[in-house]
Image (cartoon, rainbow, N blue to C red; front, side, top):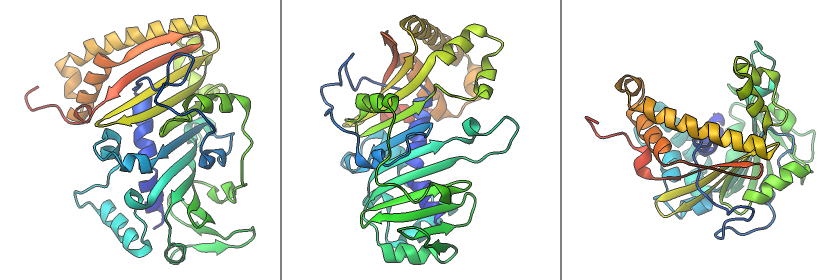
Length: 342
């Protein structure tokens, strides 16, 4: 099924998003100015084609990652070599289409509409994803594979292929080297794409802060549903701080065997940024004490405990003006299980 390519192609986005949610980061740009290693300029054109209304956007320059096979992020998104059924399905897809994301995918831009943020409480929803992939594609072979179980519609300038499944997938070829894929309920409505999407000023400003990085993500948080804040209702001070965060900006830079990343939370005032930084630093200390409890560690997988140990030990939390920044070097050792007996 074509769902295999969507799952494999987007696995890097999911893995990196998990790291971002955990609060990992390291400076990629200096205070007020981009870090010296980054090149200022326009966002990649594959990102410009994504709808500006998406709650979250992710971008990865996989050609850069491919040149750094020792990067811990590349190790995370590499294919499963354990011979699982899922990996066999993917290998079957590669043989049929000639496309292997590790070899043929150069750039990936993803827009995300998480069901938890777009559906009312108590209503079953489905995540929606729109991805623009740039690389080398054999259009004839991919089309033939899609039509084994799907159909093609021709009510637009370009054919749109619709593949049933859970979730359903739709895609179209934008050019010989670019393809757009949409996944989730009514995914075909996300296609066809316009040549360029107009972006509001707040999204443009956040893009300017990270656009020089080979890996970055943005999240709009100024219009989250009330159900999100219900988790903080018993602690008004936490709810107030959560509401003060207007956006998140994440950037990543492979550097040899280290992944340097930066996560900025943009608050609505300097006072709230200062308070949020103090709170996060306190939670880091509490987390360190909790991880020292054998009972807590027994409820985790070894790899989880290893990563969280490094996170609470090495993460740095700073703030300036309206921004709170979490920083960390992510190494392969942080993603490996703890030695036996620890």
